Amino acid sequence: MIDLKYLEKNFNEATSKLTKKGVDNTLLEELKDRFRELKEANSRLEEAKANQNRMSKLFGEYRREGKDIGELKYKVYKNKELIASLQDRANIANSKLQEIALNIPNFPDESVPYGESEDDNIEIKRVLKPKEFNFRAKEHWELAEINGWIDFQRGVKLAKSRFSILRGESARLERALINFFLDENRKMGFEEVYVPFINNSNMLQGTGQLPKFGDDLFKIDGEELYLIPTAEVPLTNIYNNEILKKEQLPILLTAYTPCFRKEAGSAGRDTRGMIRQHQFDKVEMVALSLPEDSDKIFNMMVENASNLLTKLGLPHRLVELCGGDLGFSASKTIDLEVWLPGQNRYREISSISNTRDFQARRAKIRFKDGKKNRLLHTLNGSALAVGRTLIAIMENYQNEDGTITIPKVLEKYM
Image (cartoon, rainbow, N blue to C red):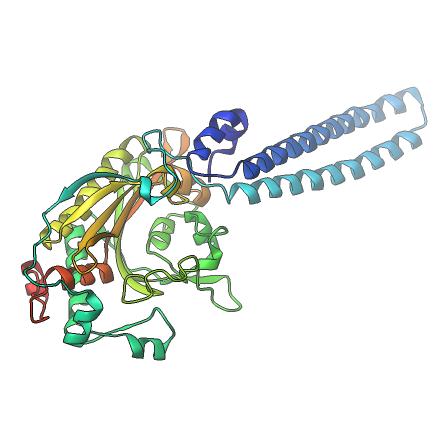
């Protein structure tokens, strides 16, 4: 959640920042109205409480002077009713304010470029040169059919569209990639963690998936529980509502999980193949950091994800997201896009984001700095999306006869 005190005191400045991210001014004006309502309610409440204190002090004076206290008792009684009413009004105003605030995204960093969509993102650099084939490069679904690697039809039969089955060597390759990513992340200092794949609504609110993106989540019927859309949710919320010691930071975590998304806003996009699935595997990195160290850790995480692709021999590029394409919780994001020769284009395979104190404020994750409790910074990123890496290997390591060569670094896992 954004800092509401900062927003109230610096409304025009904050509005300018959020406009960079494409936030509707109508929502911000509504928030401004809620601030005014809460301020008025609290002002009247404090006035009524002060009046109550003044009248309470009169009882002793009335008794000493022999005055009748009947009328005073009635005024005190009516003022108590007023205080209760004003307290309810203040609580309602605060609830409305918090409800709107939960739907307002994080402030983008000053360094984030202006832009409205992914078309305005800025390429930072390219790593490895794409291979030139002396034959037509096939797409992954063509290669899957030749090798019997992916069964799309039976995946749909078992569940519905956007589900698939990996068979034989592709299932082994999926497992090999998971182990490779986890092992490499551990070498970089990330602690391997195994987490629940179902989390409660409070955890999803903590990292920003709820309430805004509820339509994209798979909810457990009759429970306030959801299948996780990413391991970012459980990893970050391990420390939900905790105060850590400064000496504990940074905390670096990595985990493999399946991820579940309805892909509610992607109707008609990537309907063929495995690019956009309702269930997919991912190895995630999460960091909890001192505020002054988060930029350094962000760069390390980007470099780590890039190195994984380089070790696999997969050409890729680094792209800085513009304000209009930046995620809800992110203050700054760099995407890694892998080259897919069958599609003749780069496709996203990882997003590394620094959320600053946005998630920490929502999840109440703090650290003790002397006598003061401060919000820490949280960061997250894929290292890597396993299914998309498998697709990239299929397309980049294909042979003319449709067979697929396994990258050297994975041979020990297969």
